[in-house]
Image (cartoon, rainbow, N blue to C red; front, side, top):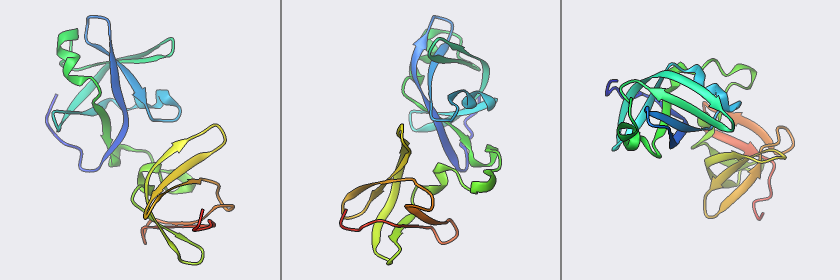
Length: 171
């Protein structure tokens, strides 16, 4: 384990519990599919506002739970410091984003404008629903805008740091 912080951390999940007495932890994964978090052999965990790099020694699925054992954590007492901590990797460790050209993490912070150039705010975060993904835009007020390419999401421009939407600014 080392204290090297990721230069551009991308949070993939969090530790949300303990499992057994041999240092196993329960994982809540933000990846899709959720098991994708296990493809990264090293995780950065944020303990006491400081990143620590840990090797993922073992991982498995047990029923609905994702479980992992990290290097240097071999007892339940040791892993108590890990409860509710973020799990991250460095942005450089992500595979190429493919045809879409971006990950959700790339969209956070983009300024959002209507097609008529009305400023709505910035993307605070995104979440999934059964129907579609949703962006949460914070400006003068909070807006929930469905991620529907071409119908609502007109243009994503990472270089300019903005997103153009087909959206009524009064809604």
